[in-house]
Length: 498
Image (tube, rainbow, N blue to C red; front, side):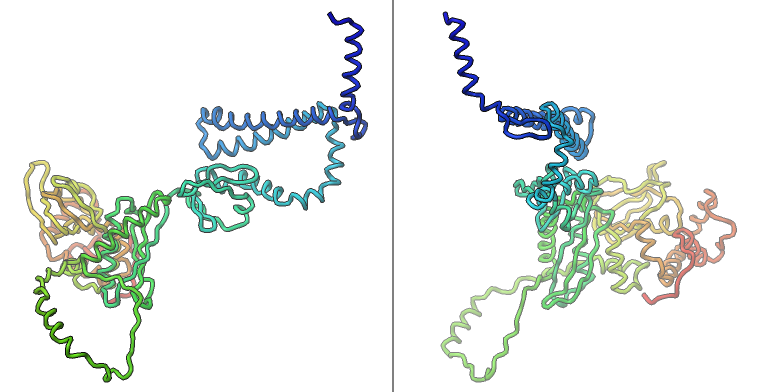
């Protein structure tokens, strides 16, 4: 058993051995600072920082998630509150260790200039991080493009932002670069966006047919939106090609690479099918003294042999029928030039219907012009289940209800798989606006079917949709007035030549 005296001696030796830990090193105000105090302060600050980070993670992953707050708002709230708790914890640790925070302000002011020069990048990123979090122009989950790099915002911290690229790499970007450089946020309001696809075709190609094929290719891609509808723009005359751009709209702009690839595959296939060539850079070579170039007679037998061995020419396939040619056969558009036909093709779209699928029902308001590209449909009366007409390829329907505002006189149903070219009412209005000659042609062609026009007038009167003041004695004048009223044309501009 150790004697008390021995214990006292050991305690004295221990205290003498570690006495340097409690010896004052310097003073801050009236407070002496020792090595032990510095160690205690350091450990306390580390614990405070770790607790603040733990609080941030719990807040983001547990509490805010249960409150059903979206990811971007969770990131903002957890980051700001986490740093706030961290700063408050550090202040409490300093005060608990007897350090006057007010006295540190004097020291910080004296070192401010030196710290500003030495840590100016960190300070700049810190301020930029606060700006990003408060302005919320960039949020977690946004799809952005910066300096040619595209990706999703994965995490926003005070100093930097983590971006996940398409290659599944995480890129750490200082916040100052996000604030100072030009950044494209493709999902600020929504993920909807436009994709531009440049296409060049050989000189001599018909621009109207090229427009038709490109639009058809766009509608064959299921991710392409019909509203806004695809557009084809003639960009210019290139060195080796006529340059076009196909504009398509998608709901998810981050799928643009796959959508563009799919459309390019379709374009290449369709161009091959219709004999439209995609040119490549060419150079013309001019040879001087060409008369001095002679061919060896020895080559003649081999040339003859090759010509004999060449296969007989295959049968030339029939020329494809384009929408441009079909529209010219429609009585309403027979006087339209290629420029207006291209407009018409761009305003409409193709849609496939299955057999027995109903396109519209009797009594519905007409909202489109329908042209049958392939297949056939039947017009029937639903109440008596009686077929009244059958329409086949290159025939059209829906124009009376569209242009006169009368309810559909019959239901239309597909007899087989059918492809229609459809022009919706608002696009048809955009097409005939400021085209008084076309309105006159429409009125004249509709007036030729006197019996149908008379039935339309009777229906409109019965439904109270036709005013007594309307001039219905002259069918052409009445139809023209009806079109102008239905499409809200206050006045028509000077007639133009179609």
